[in-house]
Image (cartoon, each protein chain N blue to C red):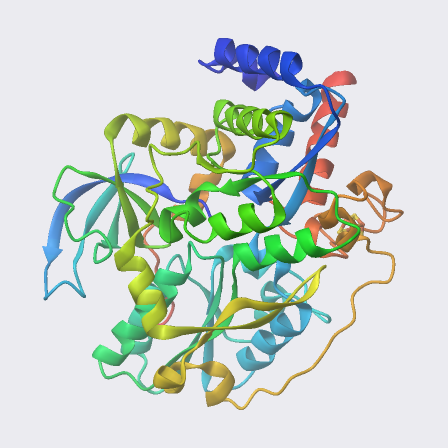
Length: 89
Length: 369
Ligand code: SF4
């Protein structure tokens, strides 16, 4: 569960004084809402390493691709799953 | 080893293996801290490529594995309260407590929802103002910023129905505990890449100095692992003990200062019980009094209790590098990933589970499966 997954920022949807900086990040086509407050300098099209919904660092594209392939191989991407459907909501 | 021959860096793997064989003149034990690395070493057959003098000792593994039984019981008890919706990462759902797992409790009527992120749990709290949402905040340093952020968000949103049950463990104190154990046989460490993405290298300098052990921050690919092992062995053979960063393309020496700030805002350091190891001083995070309203322990007045482990489980000795999973009388018999008796069999990143899984895979290959 400690592995972080690389993805590409496709949009930055909110920017309320940094704390609630969020955006959409694409993980090989699966798009998830991601908190971007730990990477205040990241922009659209940048690659970030995301762990449980929070981007923890900016990385380069080549590294992103390598890590992504490896995680796919390890079956670690299942964690991402579909956008969560919260019961009763 | 099908995977390796197909892997694009097969040549590089071969080169590092050759270099390692040339380099080693003494018996050495190297511990990899992270379960993702254990998984990588076993799965890619790297353990078998190393010279017989080199022993890889499998470290504490993953936060799921070291979460003590009594905390799982606490989470399940909370989930049975009518006003509570318990939320958890998927990994934690199957881990058995002393009576049942979260998944079984859910089937038996407890209110439990799996979430991908603690921030999803905060959203759930927003949508259910009449319910108490508790998030089972399990993790190493990597997960701490996300869990801390969820508390900060909940406060900023004025939510009084969100809290977290923390089971946060920290890597450097565990390394110290292992090193200061007179029985332990660890000469060098591969430090966990993603933990260092958050915390940086700073905490490792005093450990390398005090215990005279090389510590190499290492990634997860086969080549990363071999490179990390090679660099560690090189230091051991030369008699040096520095902190090195093999994973510099991802890990910066100072870590992520924004993340560290958020962690310190919400958490304070406390003693923690590690499943399979016991209590380690200052090895975990608790919610700071400042954010006490968001601490499930305080909110629901959870007391302390101890739940004994299975008497045959030798997890402690495995973690110290004294024995291997196949030395355990229960390995693959009474203890399997479906019915784990101890911590290292619990998640796929635990040492016993990794050995179990890949021993089976090998069997199938040999017997034409
Ligand atoms: S095989 Fe099971 S019982 Fe034996 S040490 Fe591993 S986890 Fe413990």
